[in-house]
Image (cartoon, rainbow, N blue to C red):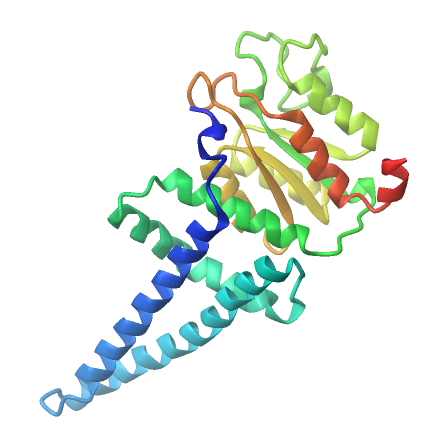
Length: 262
């Protein structure tokens, strides 16, 4: 399966599911209020229902501002600093609900996650980020390396002999060209170790929809630009990536954009 399968997935899919989740939560709150106001309920049940309803009200209000912030950012292509917190709450609280709604409506979960990545990338690109190369980390999955290659590079990426048989050589050329940091991870644990070691202020991550989604959420509040890989041989085996997309993401984060353009 290739990531290109989802190239026409729009941001509106994820935003729409978030909004549907918010509406569903409002309906749940209305049901709780109805049962709490029922005089046949015991005092204990009413107190418990009101306590649950109060928590839902807080979550609904914050998430409502967050979803509104996402929509406004997409419409005006500008970062709305005051709504960063609510946007984070909306995504964290309602992302599982968006996936559940997707299952209910028979929407492929990878389509939803791809839409989430598109929304995330747009939110990151709405910020005025100007980072030095040393503040940027390029994270790549080990499956980009050919499975029959005898040189293991997850511990030391410069063990790559740069034969050109896979895209690892191209990514190393980007690392050397722009002076950024790079790590090749076998999973989330090693990826988090690279983040701890390099302490980046911006990340360009290559992975499948599942790993990118979890990585973006784990790295928050560090901005992550996600680039989905291509899996012509199935997941986690001899995958590929569009190197120009990776380079475009790196160039967006780098501070001296005028020099790069020249």
